[in-house]
Picture (cartoon, rainbow, N blue to C red):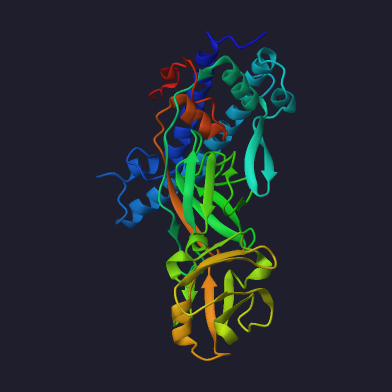
Length: 402
C-alpha cells in the first residue's frame, strides 16, 4: 500500500507532541533545576522559606510528593503512551499495514540493531523493528527529517590512568543524546584492547533511563558503529606511533623515528617491549627483543647491522606479529658500547596501552534543531533519514504550551 506521505508527517508529529508534553510534565514534577519546575515554584520569593522550620517542613512534604509520587505517576503515563503508540491497536498497527514487506518489518518490536564484526570493526547491518522499517522505507522514497547536529568534545583522561587514548574520529546522528560519554577499559589485552562506551544523561528520561550503553565493546584502532548511542567512533593508541622510550642513555634508537604496529599480547608485557643491544666482533650489533623485564623470553633478534658511523633502519616483526620500526644510531652505539660484548640491557618501549581501571570521558552536545528528530530520540534510540529530496515539515512537531 505504501505510506501516505500527505498525512503521515502530521500524524507522527502529533504523537511526538503528546509524548514531549508528558515528558515535560514529568520533568516539572521530578526536578528542581529550573524556575518553572514545581519544587522551585514552591520555594520562590515569599513562598515556603527553607530557613523557617515549619515552612521548610511544609515544603519538604509537598516537594516530596511532587518529586516522587507525582513524578512516578506521570512517568508511568508517559510509558503507557509510548506503549500505546507502538501497539498493533495504535500507530504501529497503521504502519504495519502501510509499510512495504521487509525483514525489518517482519522482525517486529520497536527498534533493534544487528551488527557485523569483522576483526573487531563493528558496523550496523540492519535496523530491525517498526521504527527501523519506517526508516528503510523513507530512505527508499527519499524522505527525510531535519537533523540534529551532534558535537563531540575532547577526550579527557581520568586521573590515575596508566594508558593513553586518542580520539581519531567520533560522530553522532540525531538520536545521540546530550550527556557525558564514559569510556571504560574492560580488557587490556595488548592485541585488541576492549572499551565499554556509555552516555550518561544529565537528567533521567521518564522511563528511568539515565545511562545509554553501546551494544558492543569498542576495539582500539577499529571503527565502531553503535545503535543506542548513535555514535560512530575510532579510538587509537597514540603510543603506537610514538612509544615512550626508557633506559636508552646512549640514544642508540632515534626516538622520533620509532613506531610499533600490530602489537601482540605475546610479544609485550602490558604494552612494554624490552630491548637488549650487544656489541659483537667486527662491529656487528646484536639487537634482541623480549616480552619481560628479566629478558628471559626472547621474541625477536637481529644481527644484520654493522659499523660505527651513520644510522641504519630497523624493520623487525616479532615472534607473535608485533612490528618494530626504528632508526639505529651506530655512532651512538659505538660511543656507549666501545668493547666487544658490552651491552645495554635497560631499554624499553612502552605504547601506554589502556589498562583495566582506566577511564576517559567526552562531552556530547546535541543542538536539538530537529523537532521530529529530537522528540523521537527521547522515545526510542533511533534516527529517521537525515538527507533526501523530500523534507518533512518540522513544525508539525512544534511543542505546545500547556
